[in-house]
Length: 66
Image (cartoon, rainbow, N blue to C red):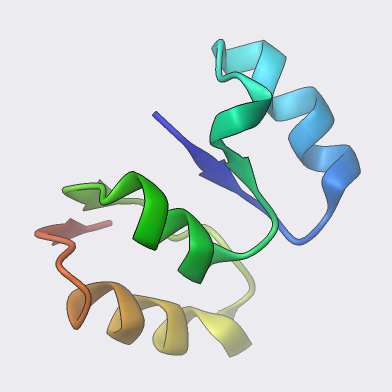
């Protein structure tokens, strides 16, 4: 499991809450996708950025997007 958020302070709380180590926490979703190569991604961001992220995921090997 990995997580991404633009805000480091969110990651600092989210990682420990879900048992995700700092080596799997990112502030850049493109870096996270390249390193983690997830099969499933949940995009929970502001509507303005959502389509761009989902399209990027779909064209970079993510098999399911929620």
